[in-house]
Length: 268
Image (cartoon, rainbow, N blue to C red; front, side, top):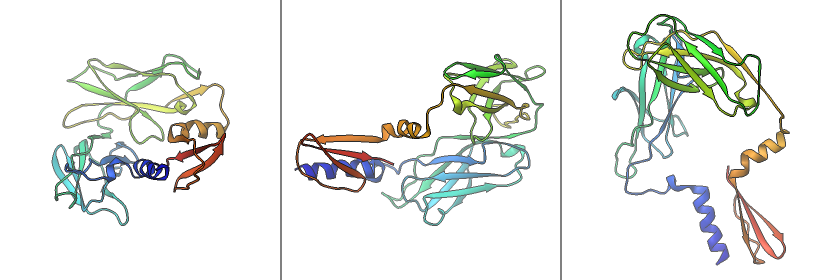
């Protein structure tokens, strides 16, 4: 009885719900941009569409219209769409869909929309912090992005961080100034920040990025080993059975304590 229960538990945790087909459409894929979704004109971007299930075709759409289609890369459930020499008209909302024979030869739901911004078509804004110098861990940091001149129609602002492929925050504004708040900052929030503003509808013209503003977060740091334990804490499930049966499954580490079988499932 116990081995059967453990087998079912392991199957449910290791395989996952998305691998068990049902009568609905395939799960929707995810779409990301590399190296970033905010890039200067004449640069290149690669759109990566990933599917959680086997797919025969990947379809990239821009503003609801087919932009390109491809077969998946070898041995992966992913297709890459390369857009070279970015221009202003490349900006906009992109989604991707997949097509497969499972279950009935239908397309998946579209991925969440990704907004691609091509910068350099409006004057750059300024970015400043309310508190200069280093910031204590756990505190709040407010960064203010401001554009010059008057507002001609609705605009939105995006906060960027060096090394991150997507904006930290994106918000609309009715004026020329917008505050971005970073709550409970940690050392991971340290780095160089920039901001841009853009027109939130076609033609999606975006400004040049502001000059970089460096944020340094100080505070006690935890040894690397402890950090890894904390990161993986929510991925470890312990199951205790008061029995003497010792059964080993893939991904399960058995142990014996106080006459009870202690199984720890490590979910990667």
